[in-house]
Length: 589
Image (cartoon, one colour):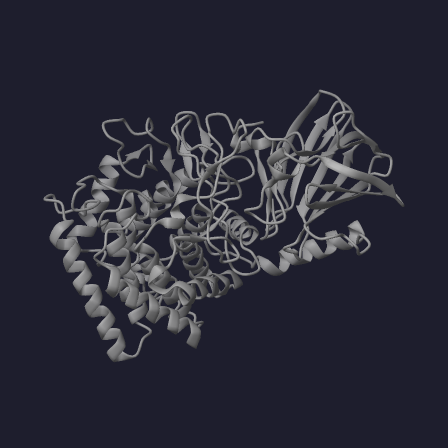
């Protein structure tokens, strides 16, 4: 087990693997994101798949092939340099995970050990019914079917699983292909070369060229991460993992292997700032389908297939240090008003690229009606707290109504703007602090970094005194060394109650950019994007004192905000005020 900054992600949209520096696949839920873990070593469970140089003396490094989630662990040993190239194969099958591992010698020969010990059900079920036929191993792991190619000389380890040692000559490579499925693997295994070709082609098709930002490489990497987290049905997992602690022994350990409406909207808006790429359409379709099914009872989160999120329950495992492991999420029973506003902002972003169809407009009308019907109800808000009339939720709905009204027929758009005016007046009446800034709710006068976003989205103008007062308060009260925290927890100093919240850091950089403060906008952006490990993955929080990632890894909405901020900060501020892009001629939410 390692600190989170050392892990890389493999993902194909349907599931994800965390890879550690010793070549261990420490986390995989199969067949899909919210299934039980097959490799659960990350949270103290059984299950592991490792490829590691033989011997104790090696130095680790690693990197992604550009614009992919193909990861290369690189080890300098006493006799040379060897890499292990890892990927989940594309195109992805929702029933079968295909794990590719290619051991390549870079300098000198290599001797490596492979250990395959899957344990389904968070470690409850070992590999059984093992047999080797024509050099291919097959077996069962609980209700899953397992097949391993490329290791005919493997032996059954004393504690279970399979183990093999490979000698790879200089300039050569050795392929391993692992398949894990909830269906019998009746078709012959495809060759490793064919699988690698289709996987590289798949990444080339998915990830567009991204340039003209202030951080092109990181922006494109963020897009690749979002692709890896997004299923073929459009649902995007908020994170690849469950119950990694935001703060040790604080009880804030959550399961993020589900698709939040808010996160879908953030990702879609970020992509729309770049262009009408495929991820925008997939987000729009997923959210529109949920609105069609649930209407004003829209849930905050769903499984990536659109089903209900199970309630939270504990797992009988040690957990990642400092965490009590859980699956499921209590958000399934919450009402989060801002989800409707975010949905409208997403649809407006698609409207800016002329990507709204009749079914999307029906979803728009459903969201608008829900805001009119439920806009005064207490909700759990962006931070999923006890229900109050959270200011951020109401202002997000104002922004969404104003944004989508620009694409509606005149009479309809006027009606939606009238509803936005009424909601803004309502918030102004009971959520404006005496100092002139927005406060969190009528009952909570504290500053909240989320309150910079509604102005960025066009709820109120950039030059409105409330906008400037709110941003000034966040900079004064919630920033330390250009890192941004959500809100103060009681009397605790910043950093003691929780880590810096990277979403808020990128949002603050957007707000500073909107005000024309380019120097500080770039400083806040750079600090937030520095809060990653060597694979360039961002978690929800960053512990500034210890320079460590906190929470589930990776966090989708943080990568979405990095992509959007990198794009927008490269343009004049006037192109984003009020959500209108004068540079491209499109209206953007």
